[in-house]
Every structure is written in C-alpha cells, then in structure tokens.
Image (cartoon, rainbow, N blue to C red; front, side, top):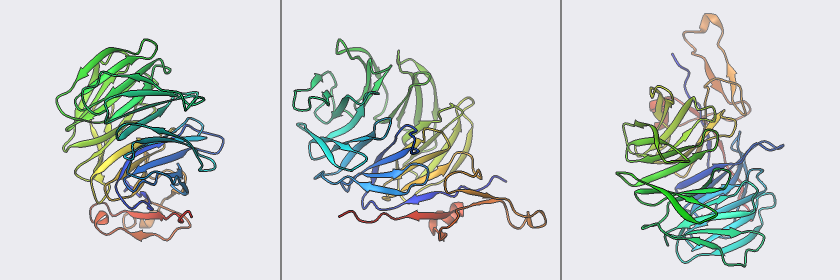
Length: 350
C-alpha cells in the first residue's frame, strides 16, 4: 500500500490563489511566490512554505507573479492595470509599469534585464528594466486577451497564449513564427527549457509540444477539466490539478495515472514542481497553497520519514510526520486522503 501524501498547507491569503512560481536554486535555497485575488502576493521559502514577506502596493487582484532566477527580484501582474517589479530581498517596490488594461502575465529574461508582460489589451510588451520610463517594445497579433507570455530558447523567442491560440514569436524581428490553434480555451502554459518542451492545458487535455516548432509531442486526457499542469525536471512524471479539487500525477513516458487525491477544498488553479523536483506546489480557490512530496515518505524539508516497528507494521502503516509542528487533522480532505497538515500562518506585515 502506497504511503499517503502529507501536504504542508500555507495559509495567509484571503482570496483564491491564481498563480505561483519558484525561483531557481540559490545559495539560500529556493523560493516560492504566489499571486492572489487579495492583491497581496507572498514570498515563501520554497522547501518549507514558511512565509517570508508580502508585497504591498497593488490596488486590485494579482493575476500573475514570478521570481527571477536568483530570487533577488519579483514581478507581479494585476487588475489595477499595472505590472510591478519588486526587490525580493527587502520587499520594496522598484518599478511600476502602467498598462491600458488588466495585466495577466509577467516573465523575466534569464539575466533579469527585461520583463515581458501580457494581458487583456492583447499586446505583448518588453520592458528594459534599466530604462523603465522608456516606452516598451510592443508586439501585436493576438486576437483576444493574453493569458500567459513566456521567454523561450534562451530569450530569443517568446511563447504566448490567448483564448484558443498559442503563438511563437521571434524576439529580434518581433514577428510571429508559428501559431497553434486548440479546441478549447487555454488554461495554462509552462515552458521547460531542458528539452524545449511547452506544456499546455485546455479542457481535460494536458498537451506537450515542441517549444521551437509547436509540433505536438504527446497529450494526455484527465478525468476532469484541468487548470494547470507541470512537468517534473527529470521528465519522469507530471502533475495536474483542476475543477474537481483533485491533484493527478502521471507517468510522462507511459501516460499511466500514478496517483490522484483530493488536494484542496476548491478548484485548483496552479501547480508547479520545485526546481529540484522534490516537491510540487498547488494553489487553489480555497485561498491556500499546499506543498506535496514527489516521493512520498522521503526525508526532505519539513518531512521526516518514520518507519513503524516491524511487529506493528500492519497496524501502523508507514507514514510521514512533520517534526516540531502541531499536527491537526483536516476534516473533509482527511475523509478522502487521511492527511495531516502543517499550517504555516504568516504574520501580518505592517
């Protein structure tokens, strides 16, 4: 019998969590940023979920959030018609970039010098962060609001998605290279640089495409509408979450469903693997983030593997405990998964 997942629950947001992103691995570990309709994006230690700080300044729902590679800068996209760049160490707001409509997506180049934005006005904008007052480069061509825009191919290309179209752009010529039409509204997009893979979700479909040609590599069908999916860094498995409150884990090579369990008390809006692949984070309509182990029972972060004594092995199945925390049982989640949860509640930043 497989050991049960014991998620770490990160509370603190007061509205649905709609986007999340991990930094790269830094000398201080890796970090996690969450975007929420409460307008207060939060920064956390990535492996424990411990709250570090809240970025205060937006006057509307925050739809997108990202960190640069070394977690020194954060960027957020919001309903107040702005994108903001923040010092992720001090929490200070560095730059506000005014837009003409709701901003949905932000992404740094690898050197953190440029920021790509996309949103409801159907335009891609490229800001030179050393000259934030200068007019951005603008790429037009989308026919509906942009949901996600990402740098790809060492920042030489851009991948962007509107309602039912994914487009590949050349950064230098600012022209469209290729367009991919899908049958239903695109709910999420992830770019995996190792192997140049683009992960797209729409309806119940999780599709994998070449990021260079947009040719389809493979696709899986889930039992429910999927809002987000993420491919493991080693490409062994993928996780997905959506409208049925469940998290699904599939073998990337065979498509076999490896795990599925109720993950939240509301639809799941975003899932992402950590940069080391040891855990994945999910964000939900229920206002929480949860961290889940890729390999259940492994000692990692706050998880400590406990193997029962042999004579009691059948009575006390091996389970993962969270040391030094008050373990409280989740009510309904427990009825399906019997999980215990560590809740890290942030202080309120003045």
